[in-house]
Image (cartoon, rainbow, N blue to C red; front, side, top):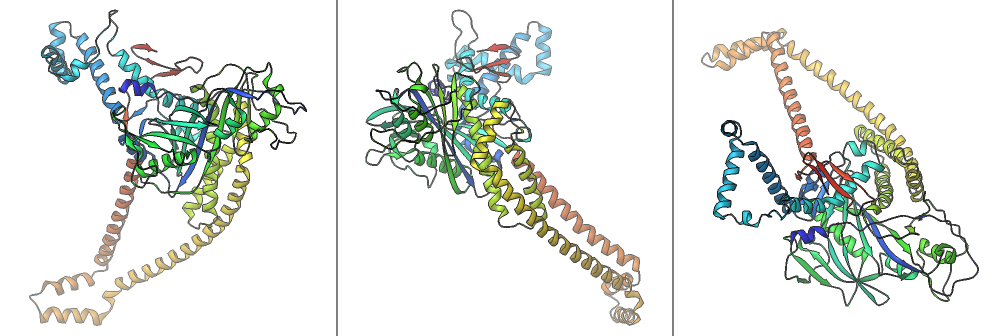
Length: 609
């Protein structure tokens, strides 16, 4: 059951294409169709406060909302408890087997008893349980096949399969992008549990499995990506309809129980008979009122926010990325259907007698002739002119748009804060550093490939990121002036406080010079000779050195308390942002986007495919 569910966790994402389009006066006698088409909806929404990525990752994994997660700076994948238990069993079994193989003589056995008693005890326990067949797990362990292959290879292959998409995301992130965002873990990627749906377009029903991907950014941004595979040989109008997030096309959904925190939408439904990978699924019918992709993505965002205790706000942005393959109806699809291609890029349906786009020139951003890439303010389209099927290779295209949209959302978030003209010097400095970093991002400094940089810069420019950053720069200039004025006031207040403190010290130091006070204390001491208070007070006020020492001790005590609070705050912060979650024992991945399996694992034992 776990194996079958894990095998469903292979992302169906995108692939590319290239060709400029010109308008023709005549229309072909047949409808333009697409052999295959998948729409990847990129849904981005902000949170009220910045996110603690370490804590959020742990919460989502422990709640089984996400199955895997990956940080940009490390090559190991973090696993949910259901997968972590399997991974730990494999790691222990392999370590124990390797240890047992080293025990070949009495001397090696004695060394094992002295230096590795835990491993030896574990090996003995496995041996005894295997002989008695009392351990359910031992009886369920895989057995070697006729060829004598390692019995755990199949289990490891399933673990690798479950991590494939997350590993590929991390690989492509590192391959396409560089800079501090990767090295300092500004974001974390997670792979959510799959959901199943029945979608209906023009009366055609299609069963699909959606495998959502999640990105959490520390600045307080949640980004979800979900791919919807449309019916085969769909018309342009049907694809345009399926790419509209507000169209009611979802008739039935099956979602995991972990996606339903308190207050989430999509309540009700019936439980499926059998759980999937240890998690119950609920079937929701939308017959009377079909649901939309926007509602589905909002449901996912609410579920994620509910589990990590975040508050969503500031609206959301939906950006469909259509990846399609031209049908074989024409020898040259682009030349025969230029108007339909323009309608597809503009997301405008084609209907007999309906309105048609004026003559347009489409800018193709593709570097190779096997595909074309177009994008607008509201969507992107990738047309494949050669056979294509959804796969992990599509990530190399969708991730460009994901990063551009992430930059746009972060820039608008900073713009909203700058509008309030903050005056705290530290916060103004942080915002200035963030703005400078985003300006470098908008220029494509951190995009490694030249063609990808052109696409990224154009998408960011189309979204208006440079203009937003200009507004941010002007606002930060005003904030800097206000912060400088506030800092001057604080310096003036500090100088005044120092003067007052100096006056107080001088006053206390001059106490012995006040004869009347000294005589009063002397008289009280003689009147009450049994009290030690007056003796102590007389001793203190008669010595300026002792008064200064007491004042210094009080100041030192306040200093120690302040430093202690700072240390506690720093340690708490570092403890909070640490990477969390069980790390898989598999490492040394090699990602080959041209191969069907895409991911291999090259470890010290050799290569596993």
